[in-house]
Image (tube, rainbow, N blue to C red; front, side, top):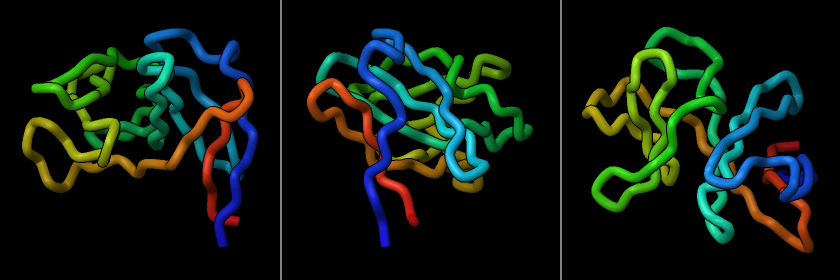
Length: 110
């Protein structure tokens, strides 16, 4: 069963940037891509396992919202977690995220 969990308020996340939350022992990077677009992915880059994606560079790749790891610049889709460089073994776990009445909520297994 899944449940929506409050992880903060809109003000807790930088505009056009990311921040990390810790839930059930998992680091999750949440991105305030635009005022109306929010994304959440595991914070760990599959390239070398560093938990750095919340400090990654966000932008777009051919219209696809993406985050680039700040260490080695590997880029990942924020929509489905796939590696935009074509490595099928490097995929991020994504989490549904929504904003309701100024609160940021993640859908988690619980």
